[in-house]
Image (cartoon, rainbow, N blue to C red; front, top):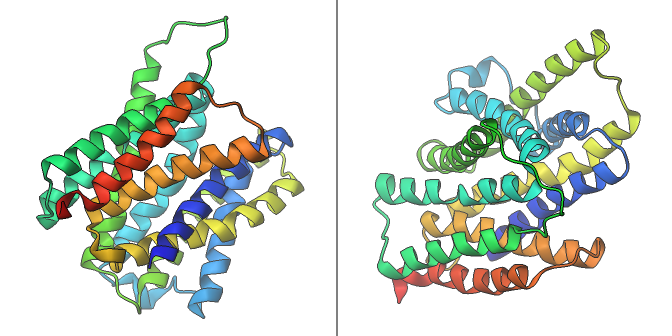
Amino acid sequence: MIFLLLGSIILTSYLTLSFKLCARLGISSYQAIIFNYITCVITGSVVNGSFPVGPVNFQQDWFKWAVLMGGMFISIFNLVAYTTLKAGVAVASVANKLSMVIPVIFSVWLYNESMGVIKITGILLALLAVVLISIQEKNKETHALNWMIPLLVGGLFISSGLLDTTIKYVEYHFLNEQNKNDYLVTAFFFAAMAGVVLLSIQTFTGKQKIQWKAILAGICIGIPNYFSIWCLVKVLKNPPYGLQSSAIIPVNNMGIVLWSALVALVLFHERLSRKNWIGIFLSLFAIALIAYGDKL
């Protein structure tokens, strides 16, 4: 199962780097996100062996959660994009990754998982590491934050944390080997439908023009996106080395930050500051404390 955790980390990091590449190539990330969800539905249906959205599953306990998660998927993606536009990449990244605190707290509260001093220390160090990794050199030209920024950051923090919490809650209460693919494909389907409706309206009103290269980008993003969630759900169901779910999600998020930083350094030649490197090494120590703190 450790390979599934690594798969979730690598594939999720790939998504972040793909959107960075879209920006460089002049591809609409907004459209790529929508076509990515359509690709997720097709990919999941192939893996599942059939298209699961139909009357048979409408009465399933997990169906309403799939609808909710589909809305959360596309809303959070757009919130990330808007927060990045208004507040910058660093602020959006910190808010997104700090959200791992929320599923950890819920795991302790809902599932009575342990939370000792060592694990708490690891979580605090992880938060500090995320901040240090996300810090970017400021330009000389600065501007004051307006009243919208705290709302955007707070919204991204809460929504991202609730998404991770929802994934764990549904996995814990409703999912098994027989229905987990049905659930994932259904969630992606409603995300895709919401995106298609919005894009159709904007295209009809002249606010958007379909980019064929955005369709290709969506395909290249969508297949890894599906399997990143598939890996996370599966590893939550069968944690490696006896890890608790309160450790899985922080380790997953910290791994994404660490891997993304290293790959960006190699592929995009992004220069890392001393604070960034301190954050990277601190994250390794934090991961060890969070993952194995209850066993020390």
